[in-house]
Length: 107
Image (cartoon, rainbow, N blue to C red; front, top):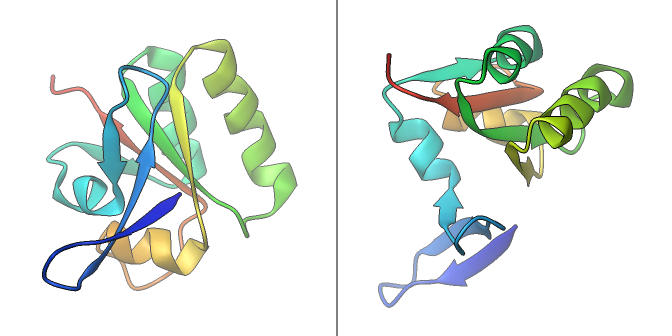
């Protein structure tokens, strides 16, 4: 994760992805029309091929997120690590933490 200070002074968290130097932020997850929240739903999205990018909280329990991280790697799905479950949950518009989330393709 990178933190960039914009001209207006606001800090913007983003990641540079391997695929075409795309800059993707938590704000893009928050604005996504189609997304999953939680490891079970996110794993299903990766398995079905509908996940465009996966977000995983760094402070989530390893036994919960490791299988998803490995699955995303096997399926060539980009992964962005987020500082905390609380931060990821907030980006998803929920009041609790989330171990993982994904932006998924429109059906």
